[in-house]
Amino acid sequence: MNQDTVRMLTEKAREIRKDIISMLAEAGSGHPGGSLSAADILTVLYFYEMKIDPKDPHWPERDRFVLSKGHAAPVLYAALAERGYFPKEELSTLRKTGSILQGHPDMKRVPGVEISTGSLGQGLSAANGMALAGKLDGKDYRVYALIGDGESQEGQIWEAAMLAAHYKLDNLTAILDHNGLQIDGKITEVMSPEPLDEKWRAFGWHVEVIDGHNMEEIAAAFAQAKTVKGKPTMIIAETVKGKGVSFMENAAGWHGAAPKPEEAEKALAELSR
Image (cartoon, rainbow, N blue to C red; front, side):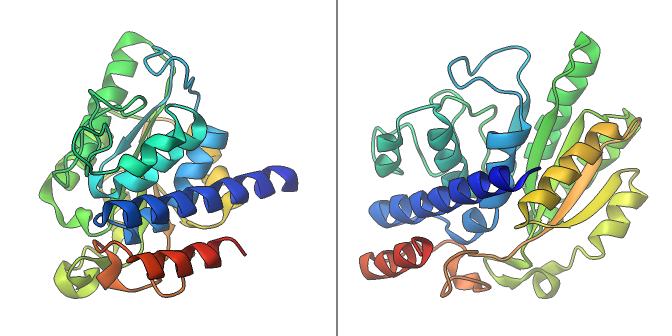
């Protein structure tokens, strides 16, 4: 990845973060912390890595993305709008009556959303199904799934981990947004899923641990995943909850609290520097 690409992706991530703040402030509710922490990951996926066509969201050969932690819908909506799946003006309708952009992604209403998510733990199973279907149909598309570290406390995540390894789904790459916080505080204090890298390896996955805010490391991990044969890949992305907004960073209270107008103004000013 050359430096022009890094700069382009960095600017896209900045715009996505600004859109997250603006739409949540307008809605008066939503989840900024885990949306901001995942912005760089989704930027690399949608603007560098995935084989997609916004003009044809159902293109059979497209790569698939599953947002397993569905409450982080703002980052997905912002990425989809920035990529051209629907007009950016739609973002201001987040969580409003009649909007296509509800609190969790709706595959029947939002172009580019592959699966409706919201109940934590289920997205990786859906991604397994997509990856297995690709294998059975002889397709070469890849499937990407973003899960949360708090979400990794769910038993279904580990059932899905076992299945993916059993069926050797090497066309599946999962990304774990490891920001260390969930709604009730530190994941290690609520119900520790650590050591995550050792657990995923024990379940038969290839594991990469990266800086989830470094565009080059993110892209390199996706490239490495394509070379792995006979097993799925887990990318553990070390991230900062609320990344990019100083007063939101590493603060569990911003898991599910929208910024007030004056807070949004301050956040947008920081993101515009």
